[in-house]
Length: 264
Image (tube, rainbow, N blue to C red):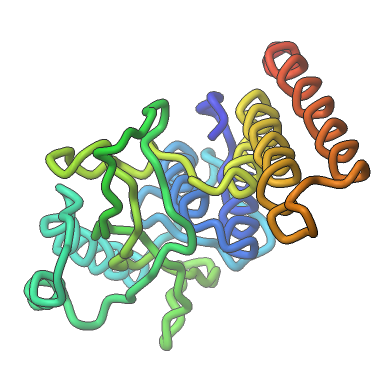
């Protein structure tokens, strides 16, 4: 996420939509939170809503929310409060029985989301005691109500609704608590690099890409040759691995400077 707190609601909405199209649920949640903050600043503080109208009202314009929109706001806040109370501690579920017990405490109508990639704690080196767990956490989804929600000016809104997300997360050991989404990164280096690029975290993008190329180089040197006669890499494979390592090193060298340039 960008450090500038003055990101507009329209910009946040674009990022939410991009994240949903790419399937990056973590980025979608992060940008949805920023969208909520931006709407608060811009005067639409009743609901974190996705506007269907073509323009976004400015802060000096009347809110024009009306009874229907206020009622939708109250309903949304109540729904999030009910789910947040059960998932605030990000419980770890290890058995079907534990999951069933958790589901029994949640509203039956909320959506169920399964995150599409494994996450690891940011900045933590995992050792032999690391464990892979299923974490239950709250996320949010955009929906178009069956009965359109409109303000007094006739603008219609999509609303945010809470959802239960099941996510795979590596922890340092079995006693460690689950991490918040913002304190984790994707284990998959390609996913990590692309998410960092979309959020403007350029140094992280390049370092993740560099690490991915190094992984591929290792595979060319060690894993792929196992399937070849004699179990040794060909000259072409060795050359390709060297090229990947050269590019990886170059990306690593450019990362700090590019990050500094992006902040100007």
